[in-house]
Length: 213
Length: 213
DNA sequence: TCGGCAATGAGGGAAAAACCCGATTTAAGC
DNA sequence: GCTTAAATCGGGTTTTTCCCTCATTGCCGA
Image: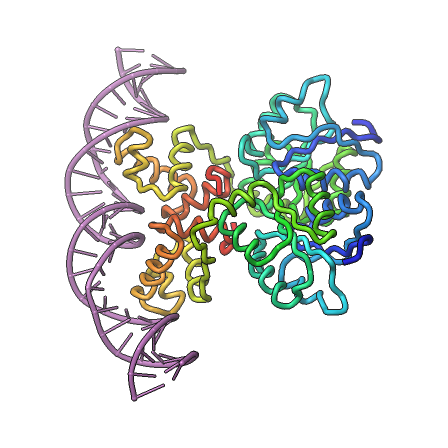
């Protein structure tokens, strides 16, 4: 990683937010925005081994190819790029999963610009930037082995439909399976996600951008 | 409204987004950011007849005092301030309500910076800036009298709780009323909001920032 | 080949949600 | 005083959701 003229890529689905951040970063010195993308899919198309940034600023809450998925893809394909997460919420699961994945920084979208600059600087120097809430979640979960929640395609498909006003019967028809099987998926997710009602499914689906508001 | 050095206030709950937008606006010429606020409540505290901007950029999706409410308050107390809405989604109801309220512009957060600059310019010149989707919603609803959905405090209180995993019985206890009354609120909202299930309530509550994800 | 595991499906029953029928009280407006 | 509207509460019914136990199929790896 060079010590000046750090190359940065910006991945967020809101153009206005991206433009604002570009302006903000340009007001700092030593950084160049080399690439913008609205989602992970677009990012993956634009990246190549010969054209890649030092740091990627990655939004977690995106529709098409979500941030978590994008981060995993990046670790697998471009392990030398430093990732800084920009997220709306401090979701414990997401924080822990991203830290485990090796992201270098984690910022909330209501961070102060100075904190943002600090994060860029630290990460550019090869250090980590974890705010208080990240270390707090790390401490809280130090003992209990937190295995990341993995959902298969069928469960995701069900979850998307559970985030609508369809009844389980209607969901079953939609998925071309029996209502009993749908019951099974539901109970399975109740267990996995530690929730106990349809509302919990809806909230989870929304938090993970499985339903478009 | 002066033709140069337009005074702008920025209301959005994400500091990083605000900072970015400040940088972006500073890169234009003729504008000054005189005030930032994280929500309508903070804005109302900071404004005074002697200290008020020409234009307010207002986010609709805020926790504390939501954008719609803030916009109404502004029309009532500072009718001469021009409002430009910055929203995540093109929700037909919100668009129509805001237009009816007399906002001067309506932008999505994935607008291009050039579009954003155009909007500022037009509104500063005393004109309107309505993108295509706004006029489309206007046309679509030209005939049918769209009366804005008004919810009272009790309904809002109920709606917040309906956005959690509580059962209606538990919501009743929380609100210190009988389960029947809660049934009544529910059915009333089903009618008002044109939905037919608990899931619909949850989705509506989230869209209107009544529940914190 | 066998055992396990994932995806699928079934029966029955208790709880919650959704949909009817209503009612009383209270406060505001004319 | 009368009307209206809003907030509150009640009984009963049907549908949906939730919680058990269990069976079948097929595939994959030891």
